[in-house]
Image (cartoon, rainbow, N blue to C red; front, side, top):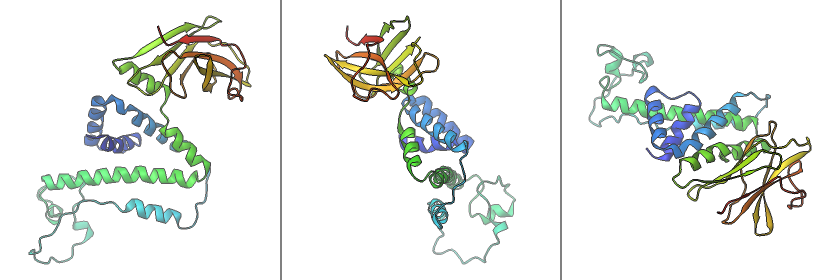
Length: 283
């Protein structure tokens, strides 16, 4: 299974829309490819956001119909009739077998379907229909979010879905064969550890026992490269602990420092207080 196919299954799983067969394929693929976990987390986060409920918004006239028409235009595989086949009398809708039904061999709808019950062709058609339905369901849900969040909210949601979390990157680092870390003590007795791996994009800072700060302050991380501090992101913590995916790339010999700045980080791009911890990344 390739990553694109897994992404489609992951979207359906997040919405609880997979058949038992597709769910089994999804779980087996995830076991074989743990590096696809960020896709699962992004889909789960999107489904959670969509389920929280939002205020009613009236979409522009015709937008809903246009979206639904595009979503419904699926390319389901249909049986091809032979050119030499005799013309049949029109059938009533109730006489046609539904691929989702479990038919007995003597059910008249089985003959009307054009395929024996349980035949490989019928099972293939059913599989394609299930996959298309899953894609359409997820697309419809995303379209609802688009109708409700037209404007800056859509960009914010999309950016949040694509951004990896500190936890997911840390899990990738720990699973890699070249994981590295460095730990230092905070001035008030806490502890901070930097995790990285040459084979994984991203550096994660994990801290415990951070000192209390005011509501109008933030912690800010820095890559100290030689004597130059480079901003690596600001964050808050309500319980003195944090796991943060640093912004930017760490270079050999960098020292990771943590300071207390005004809310959102230092506006000048330079530290305004002494570090509460400095973590070397070289031996």
